[in-house]
Image (cartoon, each protein chain N blue to C red):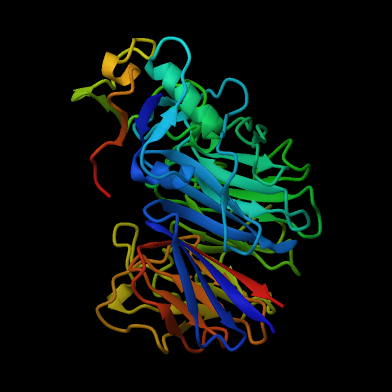
Length: 371
Length: 98
């Protein structure tokens, strides 16, 4: 029988939420790794039993956990992330050079075809890859070797590589996003990279249209349209139709175009979801109303989705890795909040219900569709 | 045997209850004890000391016999009661937030 497994990373552990395809009754497992920050838990598209989790703490550093049985049991695997060669410097908040220092893993992106291959986006920003199921990690140094590396500056959350998008059509093509450097693309499996920020405009940097320096919050791609990318930037919702060569704004009628996540419907490449947040210094929904916005036209025309969501006195945030979709029919949409709720919609966003309401602040949500 | 008491999160990670007992050859120092600890429990590598520099992580402390030994040199001998197994070496997560 088909069903879904929702993988939730929080400030104080990981949780696994499971349901059958009706998505009405949920079993909650966890906390796994209680007390640790779980920036991301995700599963291999090639083997749904293979999960990876990024576990960290200010006290004891970084761990990577792996499950081979869908999250019932876990084993720590390799946690050594060593920058290639002499790491050099990037800019610090005050503009001075600062040595590259590993802080934590933000995002794990398993290969689309090989359960043992997984990419890790880390802070300070770099891309690592494991070819042995997470036992060992090697940096793909061409990214930091992009000539702009010494000019990268951290966003408020750190200099983090938080988004990794793999092109299902071309295994050599990878997109990454870094706060606050922007989007980079490789077409040769990570050897060389080019900045992919043309068309972005950011008022908070000296040259608003600079090649590098934009605070990109999240990218999304539908696998059937790998040349089309959607972006939630610090401010502005953006779209590219040419694999990041150029971007244009699709914020349209959104009440605010600040936010963190962006998500594409599993079956409809033109259907996109965002969660607008009031402003860069007020990380909560406008008017205390938690609204997901959906565009069925690839942007510009957005409708508020409110049924089942709190429409008063709600001041939570939805972080960049905290939305997901399942591949059932109809498409399920999920998001977690900094208030510890995980909401699910089994009808593509038309109506919502909480799966859980009192978890620690949610950092990430991923969904596996089980058959 | 050298007795080591890990903080709760690392006991969970290493799947041990209570104290860890280690057979350490030669001089009993922070370095020699931690080297054997990490050999016996490889999942602890990187959690107490940095992988590369082998320096103690900033928010980890080492106590024994009522003393804070965190800032002692890694090759300095540990107190005799630790070397004799009468007292444990305490590995402590610093009190801070969370």
